[in-house]
Length: 65
Image 1: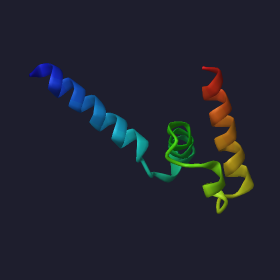
Image 2 (image 1 turned 90 degrees about the vertical axis):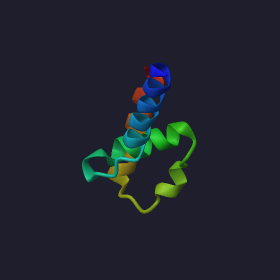
Image 3 (image 1 turned 180 degrees about the vertical axis):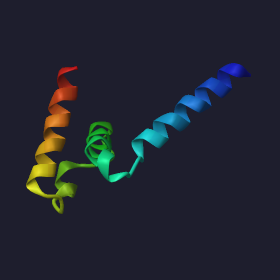
Image 4 (image 1 turned 120 degrees about the horizontal axis):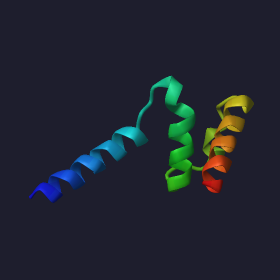
């Protein structure tokens, strides 16, 4: 039973992290959503070039890790 609780707790944390829409976290959230396949970079066309570049940098950094 404790294993189930641990699993569910971890899943909740993953969801909370994935959908953290605080402005300060958007680069990380969008980058993670692109990595997971839930979002495509072309869908971010409304963001400034600077923000899209930060997301690309985030993705490149995570690709190396």
